[in-house]
Image (cartoon, rainbow, N blue to C red):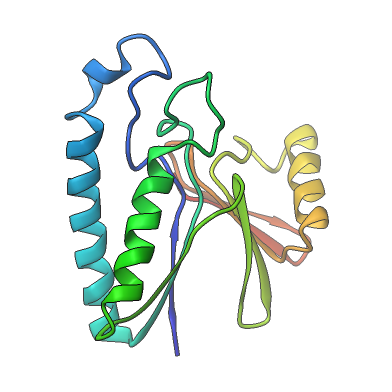
Length: 168
């Protein structure tokens, strides 16, 4: 009855996180924002046509920060997400709801599953140290499912009955 989309950050690349970052990006932040908005909104409207109700949950990445001197929430990914949220509230013909973050992680429910998502998780959740860190996050957030991005490969782990998804 609904389709859930997770946006896990690093969509827009900032300009002051590491030296020469602005020169390595495919265009400045404004150009990236325009392109990302169009691609994501077009995709969401096509999903809404096919599935009806779309829920989008968002967390910011580390590349979109305005600089290391500013809050992690001062992030271009968040600016993109708030634009998508505004569009979803103004365009009534689509049943799209966009939920924006208030911190660097988000908790929500999908059917009877408690979900925790954040941008940076752990490289490998099956080894002792990282596995314990994931278990602590899941315990703190009462999560059955844990999704994260950041790393450039996909993987899936189990922690008892709980599942961990590394998006890549």
